[in-house]
Image 1: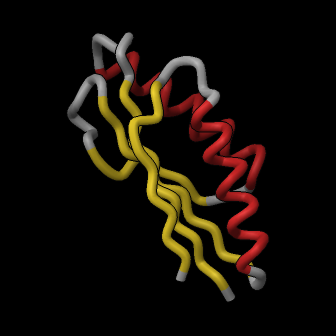
Image 2: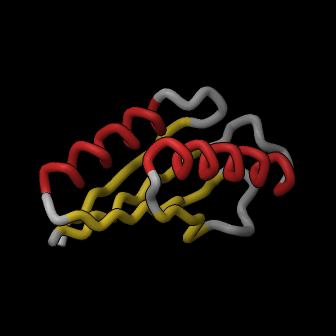
Length: 93
């Protein structure tokens, strides 16, 4: 059994309020949950307008499957038009 945790740091240059930030977060989280069936949540910088940290968790019996799905989520995060991915970290347990 393999547990994967992917942490994504985003910079939201065009966000000028928490409401605008929340719009991005809800859109991104909904899209990733729908496409990949993973657990995902904002885990840091809740009071910052232009920064957010989102964590994605996945459990599977095959480590290669976890890595493939996390790589696809990372591609999705890099291509998201409303935010800049400023950092990421993948931990496999």
